Image (cartoon, rainbow, N blue to C red; front, side, top):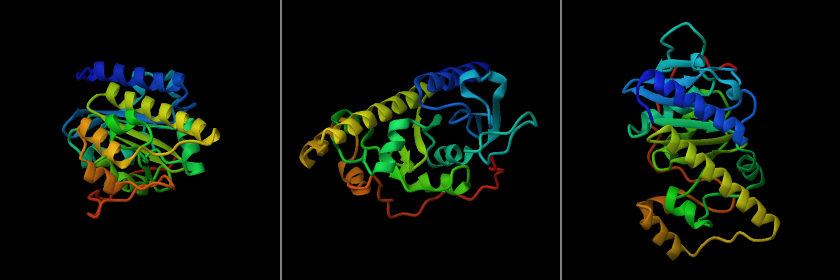
Length: 245
């Protein structure tokens, strides 16, 4: 990923357009952001069509969500992005999308956290589902805090997905894997299958991917697609944001 301001704008535009053309979002849905520095991010503006996004439609804000200029407002979903950046300093990019099959899985109670696909276990550990919170509110940001500490890809019940990474390409690749996995599991359910791998094999795959099996397995539960929150409380601080649509 390019790190200069203008190059980063180009990267963000390209990623948002890729999300649109891949069918992960429609119209003005979804948003993406990247770190400009320790206390600055670039994020897509509110209400803009991502398939036709321009670099001047990206907004620079601080980590409190305050825009650095009066030219446009940041995405109404900025609370999701700020929560991720605050929880983990290693995150350099955040993507929020509305992948069709993944959302359908949350509606149907199909879990992507059950250790069914070995590629997901190795690459991501698991893809847990965050319980529903009203989109575009600070509650939505606070809801992801406990799980974003451990996982790079989350489903938001009834709403979409959040993927994070060290680069925009990294976060986008995880979005592709998330939706591809959802498509496989959805079709498997239609065909009457989709049983989890044995726990011993899940543990082996987690270790191969550099994940802590005890920590991952203690935070996810099968059946309804939701994940257990860690015992420690979320550290997200309330932020005064203008989050109206």
